Length: 374
Ligand code: SF4
Ligand code: SF4
Image (tube, rainbow, N blue to C red):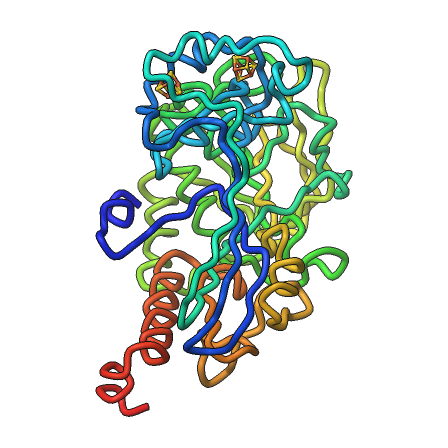
């Protein structure tokens, strides 16, 4: 991201939305709404003095609302550009007409409550969609207790908990009583490969569950992990070795069995009921924490974006791309890569991005199309 931010040929329009796309390949006209941050981007140095004094607290979306942020905030520490934003919907001044404490605190004079949304018109030859994914909310799968049992969390919440920059500084404190979770169960295919929700395999959860269990052991040598799975889908290069390393070096217990239900005892410990399909037995296991590998889904707003771009989506709301030209959408000159096309891991997303960039270059740079024989 830093490299992209510094590159002389790349303009990053963060906090912006596409409103319309007209024209055709080689000559698209794109209308972009650049939303008001109420902070001057060329003045703010992200010192954070304003946020330290801002009285309004709201759940921090980047940290899965496991901690609070202020109404004036930086979405995440490494974000580009490093500029604060005032969250208009949660700011006392926009709500009640009083406060402006951030304005008084800012020594640089960066706050600008008069700032308005800007409309930009861009002329571009090709467009690449790379809008990523969202995570399935497992609340409807009531058997797992998400939202009802405090110590049942999603994989993404776990990622923030175990991250050194996260809400607990990387300590795996369980939500109910802030004690260290030492025995953790990871439940695979939550919403994925399920005809009622997402019927596809999300493709990345097997590997990230193994990685998460390894991290738990690296943080605490006494940590014990159980990964409940239907089957492992470790199809990438060295992925199988990674699974073996998880068992042999990190002591991860792989349990082939679909979990039927998660209950809670009086101390808030989750009890996992499952069928051990190897031993053909129904068993239960008391753990400190349950982590749900929730399905990865098409990003929110995919339908609206598809409408604006006039491109087709598939039945799961991923961008529909060609079989022979896997970066090409249904509209010439618009390409797509990464999870917005469907489940894929990071190496695959990077390959797809290279393909999309090459296809776009063929459209707009005559020398590239000659060299590649198009
Ligand atoms: S708005 Fe001002 S106080 Fe806040 S981070 Fe930017 S420079 Fe610092
Ligand atoms: S006006 Fe007050 S509530 Fe709004 S961002 Fe500034 S300090 Fe926070």
